[in-house]
Amino acid sequence: MTDRYWHFCAVAKDGTPVLRDDSLALGPGETETYQGTPALCRAGLHASKRAMDALSNIPRPWCRLVQLEGEVLHDKNKSVATRRLILASFDATAALHEFACCVAESALLLSETDDDRCWQAIEAKRAWLRGEIRNKGLAAASDAAYVAAWAPAYTARATSYAARDAAHAATYVAAYVAARGTAYSARDAAMNAAWVTRAAAYAARDAAWDEIGDLLESMLTEAADATRCDFGAT
Image 1 (cartoon, rainbow, N blue to C red):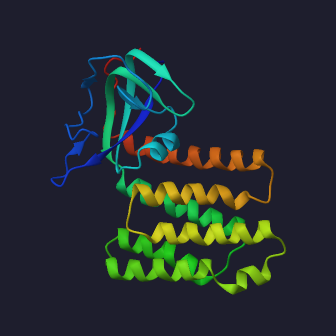
Image 2 (cartoon, one colour):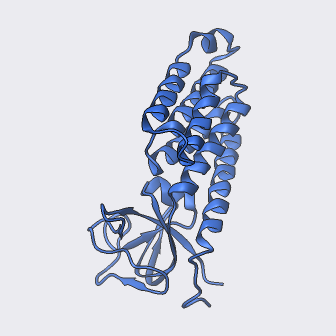
């Protein structure tokens, strides 16, 4: 089975997915080509083996599952090629918002954060997604979560700097989730959630990051199934 990669791109005002040079992002079954020598971070068609790496490199709301062909170069968290076959293409807005909510809930549980403002921020984001509250209500919930991140009660209750930092990171996860930005809030929430394990060894933090990445991979794969095709698969 040929390796699959993830790629995120922006959306134009008319709702059309576009690449960094504002050209049209192609859809399932189509192949984008680069005429030249690929160079990581500089030239060619990029994508990442792990969805979390792709989101971290290019935090945008449109997601594509792709296959890299032609001349291909690899780095630790990204690859570049001269051809990029599109296997699936979809608006990942809803999936990214839900991913951020799940990450935030896990972070609050892990840090034993019980401030209602943090939990209410997550519920506000889900209510906003369902159309039950407007931007003003979501912004208020986000502001309340940011206040909670600096609440004196956390620093007083913490038994160590690590515990205090974990609680601080967890409350910021909730605040990011309640922000309106889709891809950026999902990426930042994931990064802060990984730091909730600061009291543990680096290996534990890496394991937490991998677990967060696996969750994103699962949610995006499910969302991609509706538009996925196997053109060019081997």
